[in-house]
Length: 205
Image: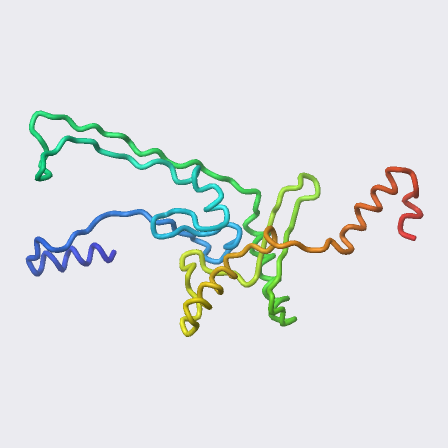
């Protein structure tokens, strides 16, 4: 839309040189903050900076097309020579097991819990399918807008801004270590049942 307005302005003012309008592509995230630490973001050159975007960048980015031609020292094409075109190749698709609705619900209630309980270090939620082990949601708070990944408090020093950005990008669910706590009771109980040390009637005692 802005390019269209610029073209109209150039025509009205009879401007024929000095301004170039070139088409370009840029990664756009329609759900903004949703699953931001999981998905990750891209830089200005569409190269993955973190998250899945970085991990699978080699497969997602595809290959650029090219035009090969013979030119002289002044940059002009030499007559009677041909050009060789190489078509661009689209990147591969990557389909996650994440469920959009479950992810949204997990993020909503995680944020509420962190705010209500004043969790200064934020929090994480992982929801898995007990039948398949598929991860249906991986939520982290605080999160960030994938379309504006460098938006932080501008009143901070450059070093503090960088630290804040890295903190928002960090997916603590997979990068940090946690003690399993009571969740590990499932493992010991299962082992006791399998070895016949106890029975389902006594397992809860």
